[in-house]
Image (cartoon, rainbow, N blue to C red; front, side, top):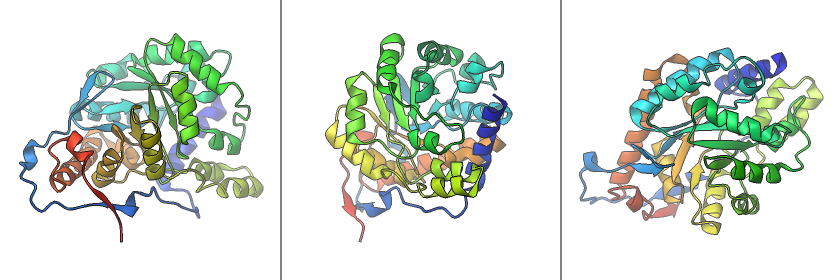
Length: 342
C-alpha cells in the first residue's frame, strides 16, 4: 500500500511539472474554427449556459475531472475543487478511491466532501482492474456510499497499467464486471478512458451492457504513458513507455466518431481541453459536458479561490464563443457552424 500511495504522489508531481522529452499529438480541436457571427442580436449577459447532469442543474456544462486520490495532499486538493464546484455550480469527479477502500486512509474522500459539494453532481471513481477483482461489486458500492456519489466512474487505463511497474496486466473479464456493476449499483455507471480515447467499437460494447455515459478522454492532454515513463525503474522500461507517449485517439476525433455512431448516448469530452473555446467546439461536436483535470491542478494545490478564478475564465470564454456564434444557449451552440482551419 505504501508503494501505491507513493505512486499517486509521483503522478501528481509529474503532471504538475510535465514529463520530459515527450512525443506529442494534439486534441484535433485546433483543426476547426467557428464561423464568426458579426451580428449576434443577443445580450451577452443573458446567454444561458445551464444544463442538467444526473438530474442536477449545472450553471455551466463543465466537469472538474477525476485527477487525484490516495495521497495526503489529495485531501486539500479535493476540498478546494469541491468548494469551487459548489460555488460555480459545476460537476466534480474524484480521483481513484482504491487507496481509501484498501487502507485506513481516506484522504478526505468521505461524506464531508459531499457536504462541501451539497448541490452538484459528485462522481465516485474506481479503476477497471478493481471492478474486475474479487471485491469489485463491494468496492463499487462502497465507493459510491463513501461520498454519497450521484454516479460511479469506472476508468479504463490499459496502456498505463501495461507500462506501470506492478500494473494490472490481466484485463480478462473487465466488460462482464462493468455489466455486473451496472446491474448492482443504484446509481448510473460512467466509463472513461484516461487519455488514450474511446473507440466506437468499445463504446458500443459499453453501451450494450448498460453504461449510462461515456467520457472520451482522448489524446491531447496528459499522457499517462509518459508519466509512467518518468517513473520507470530502468532506461529500458522508460524507452518502452515513451514510445507510447502519443498513443491513442485524439479527443476531437473520438468525440465526433462516437457522437455520430451513438447520438443518443451522453458524452463527456475531456483530454486536453485548454480553454472555453475548446469547450465550445466540443459541445458543438456533440459533447453534453466538458471535463478538465490537469489544466486546473496547479490552482487546486493553492486555494478554492484560485480554482474559482480559473473556471470563471473558462466560463466567460465559453459565453463569448456563444455570443460570437449567435448562440443564445447550449442548444443553439450545437447548431453553430464549424469550418476547417486554413
